[in-house]
Length: 239
Image (cartoon, rainbow, N blue to C red; front, side, top):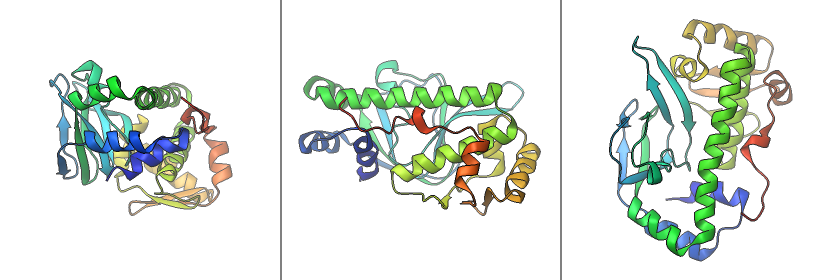
């Protein structure tokens, strides 16, 4: 059930059989959510963290004028709210973008891991540091990259992150979200995103249609987005 999470960890370091067993023992309730369902709200007291098994999840904040900003996307194998273990409540909401399967990991069991498995604890700490690195890259996109560049960059990022857990190739991957969802990730209007996707398609770089991303020229897409995967920390080394 947690195979994709283990794939994500093992890209960066070795996970022992004992550590794998500890992770499996920490898993609690399995929950299925439909699409567009907010299951963690800002300020809600939390005693569990959520591990995503299948689907796409986002973190978001709503503005007083009704606009929404998606601040992170999470793919299978991610812990969208692992940081709630120390924070105990979040300053943002967490919502499914597609039908999702998740497992709850009680904070009491995470605490036991921190007390009994120091290396595994460092790997979970690394996961929250990685989330922060991705946040910083999104901030650069929102603040300084053009609409074309930030769209290309995000599509490149997802190609790598999904590839780590076996859900993408260099040519294609499933992305069953709407252009509105994409616009809320990129800080753009749906109309603007539509124009950008049209330009990327006409240049033969990428096509986003029917919930699927088809890449025509990955190297050029990376160049346009100034995409450097170093912030995803893909080098395997002891932590």
